[in-house]
Length: 223
Image (cartoon, rainbow, N blue to C red; front, side, top):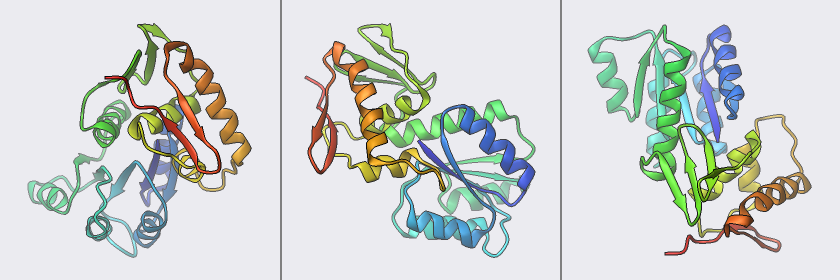
């Protein structure tokens, strides 16, 4: 899962990115509204954490432009503006959640989990795919009830495949959702990550199929 943090307070942004990376998310940071608008137009993210008071272009304008491009990306507003009218404006502009500053990191992480879960599957906490179950809150996968030990990158891969079960996912799409700016990941590295995840899922009959030259597909769950 890849998150964009749009926040002009460098200390706060650093704390956010560190916390989210420790939870296994890929995180990119921008500090102006113009940078946020450009990043959202050019990249695929799974969640936007947005400050309203961004310089050069307001967070609300960034949000309106995002929704104007028909993006359904979940958006969490973080702001010092906590009046009722401020919350109404943010939600009416298209935000999914609104969190005033200061805030507790534990609560922010819980809201991030809820929003990325909503973006993946419409809300269920537990996803099922044949013998595989995946708890989106604890980010824990199980085969026939037995926990599978997965690295943070393997968990992110699994989330991407579950979100697109039965559909083709290209290597470029995987890189776009797994990697932060400046992080160089080769096609060979993606193959290695997929291979490792495949070996852990196959004992439960869950198959990641390689479509040569095109990408990968998590087979549809048996009915």
